[in-house]
Length: 319
Image 1 (cartoon, one colour):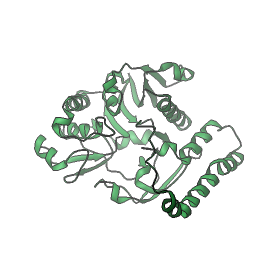
Image 2 (cartoon, rainbow, N blue to C red):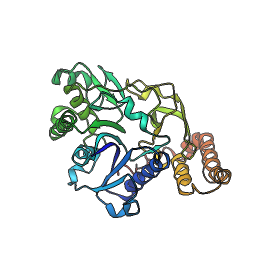
Image 3 (cartoon, rainbow, N blue to C red):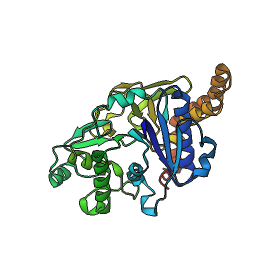
């Protein structure tokens, strides 16, 4: 068994497989010199055939029924792990630095995530109701793009307990996300019942783009900077005012934004002269999209006055 491993899961549409491939490529870019392994669990190993046999890269097949093809597919990961210590990274993330230090941050934990405890409000459930129902002192609140877990009975218990809660999801009072069971509140309650605690978000490990108004990055330079947090949408989760994380989480629809597409373009053309490459990024992505955004902001009131409001655009990740 390996010592430490990064883990992700990619199932279903090619859209998700491509996200996982981009995560894998960013991991390889920054973690070739350390001892970390990478495990990709997927229902389509053929898509990742070019990575089979690469040093420290492991591709394993997973079989899921339709009810597991959603957020709770993560519950199946424990059955496939190959290392003593594991860090799950969601497929819609990119890696910008060596990740050795992340394991050190989670030292002493059996199962953990990055976030903070809350005792009021909502976390895909009424928090106070869940605290009373399960006799827990607080509710761990986090975005489930990063999970740390050991290959031990306590971590296994967290996964098993969360999976049991899924069977009674609606009856227990949990709220669905895009019509599906969301793994985050289930794992949160399971963590609390197993006396497992969170790691506070200090901005060094990960950043969820939805929480910040301004995020700049360059995957080839290992540069990330996030500022101007949108505190009204954090739901009580404590986040730093600035972040320089090793991992950016392009959650929700951010993988369709020009910033993510620019990062993928950089990964695709990493062999280019960096000056030429950045010129192309600016011409192909930055200028057109910032100009488009500026024009939208100027013309939006007139558009709404003449044509009214458009229907909400479908999210590829949820439709």
